[in-house]
Image 1 (cartoon, rainbow, N blue to C red):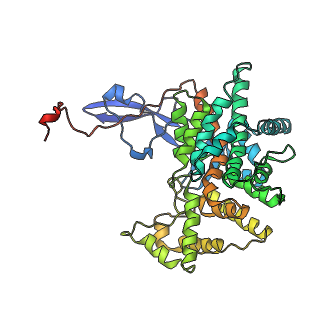
Image 2 (image 1 turned 90 degrees about the vertical axis):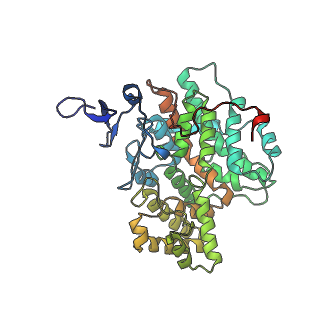
Image 3 (image 1 turned 135 degrees about the horizontal axis):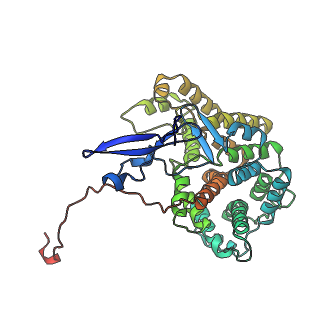
Length: 435
């Protein structure tokens, strides 16, 4: 990146008696990075950054985060504006295509999602033969990978049409597969998608409609689900998104890359955190609703216990998504006339965190997971499906990230280095001589 005088800005590194100049890359929001791609070639050294907390793996135009100021934008648009005015389908189009759609483009995209929403009937056999105690995330990861067998590359279309059809197919079918897995797990009849319902309405209907109790769609429930999925649609280079890019760099099919993202999201430190929050709130409720002993345990350095839903790897200010989902939770519970004691406990915890010196010092503000589980509970989503709901929302982001990486003319296969600290050269010892 050139400075105001027209010269390439560089950083000097002196190592082993040799000084090298490394280019400085400046992002559109002013963030700076030192390009070390030639470091090993020039010096014989590599960098060591466990957890990749200081390492950029790509240049991206999709999502901007500023953890210090609590900023999150998709393609430049603040996430709170999208949550208030947009729908999940429109936001998905924005992330994947880079622009907000016209009415005609949005209608076409919605029709394509509807047309692609059915899954092959033979896929039911897979679900019915999966052990009943299998976790929904493992099932979803496997089934997304299986899609490639049922819907291989389209040979009769152009490359762009092929990619667009495949990407639309994934967003549409994962919603159907998630609802199908829930129904089959309960021994219920599978509910098929309806052409007269929107994306979120269709999902809720496929989850909860029954021959003996038809599901009554509620606008507030549809709005809450739209907001939940919009807030989870992308979040820069997190664990699962980086997994999608890494696996995709091997030029595997997009189904395999998305499957890897689902597997990465599964962990309790990533996508499973919203389920962990509900389990924590239930534990506090079972203890009479007294939050004090749980707070004190979390502050005790000698106790490994911690409060779930507080703090974030990137956000050092209040998570902007948490403010939105908190408001959504209150509106949904009020509209549906639901009294959830877990929300009362959550609010007490939040007030403590915002005032307690320990939480302030370590910047342990509530994150999006803190309230999202309450929204899902109000919608009737079972706890073991919470992470699946996260995955459904993250699909557009994963697809956009995979597509951006695949379209990059400077694409390279991801190949991290390491610092070996094992045993030096030793020789094979015949088994009879070993002691």
